[in-house]
Amino acid sequence: FNTERFGQHILKNPQTAQSIVDTANLRPTDKVLEVGPGTGNLTVRILEKAKHVTAVEMDPRMAAELTKRVQGKPEQRKLEIMIGDFVKADLPYFDVCISNTPYQISSPLVFRLLSHRPLFRVAILMFQREFATRLVATPGSALWSRLSANVQLYSKVDLIMHVSKNNFRPPPKVESSVVRIVPRDPPPPVEFAEFDGLGRIVFGRRNKTVHANFLAKGVMEMLESNWKTWVSVNNVMIEDGTDFKKKVEQVLEETGFAESRAAKMDINDLLKLLSAFHDVGIHFA
Ligand code: SAM
Image 1 (tube, rainbow, N blue to C red):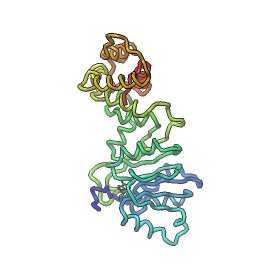
Image 2 (cartoon, helix red, strand yellow):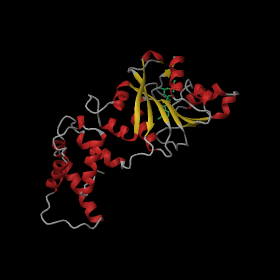
Image 3 (cartoon, rainbow, N blue to C red):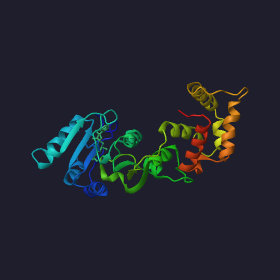
Image 4 (tube, rainbow, N blue to C red):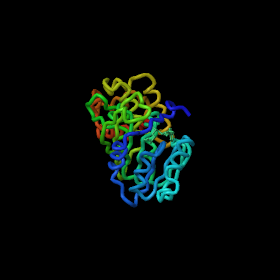
């Protein structure tokens, strides 16, 4: 195991570790999922407050250290360590997720958590600062992106604190920040692949118009092929001389988004546009 590859930067500052755990407002009945516990600096603090912790750790040596740390203590019964890659692990039920994982798995971590059912109550996650600020970015701000829209479609995200690299051993190259994610419950009735598919197009060049992004290479072909599939699956008659490109442009004009730019569109705008396309059988995934 290589420190860089597995992002093994241990959180050495006890106050920081404590405030991360305090931010979760744990209840004595809570089951907690921790990803990448390392030597357990967060884990032991979670165990003080929660009913049970499942910790997924990829490095068996780290898992062994954590096991030793709780051995013979009352907390031992409350801790289950799963050795393996979080991305592939079967996740148990959990109320709360707390994690300081390597930043390589930031995106898969967020989307795996948000697609897990039943929904969790809150997640407190440490990320590279740049990633964290993109998660909380608002429409019109410099970092508003497909990532921001996708995550905020399903949750409310807040920046909790900045954590400087000196809090870790060895110190990583980048600065870190902690965010709180609260899932929208019930989740909006939108298929993620569809919303994300539209996002791929309009955020392709976020400062260009939506219309221009739909004219980008390959986009019309992809949408037309999706549309033809939809047409045949639903036994819809295609009128003679249907011009697919005109059909798309008509939706853009009628919704009023043709000259908009994704950089300034909020989630409701994106949902309106998506639903107008769906109304005429145009799909993005
Ligand atoms: N949470 C501890 C802390 O705050 O001190 C350790 C943090 S360290 C940045 C990340 C930990 O995640 C390491 O112990 C590493 O072995 C583990 N890890 C790396 N990739 C993982 C993965 N895909 N699944 C589970 N654990 C992983």
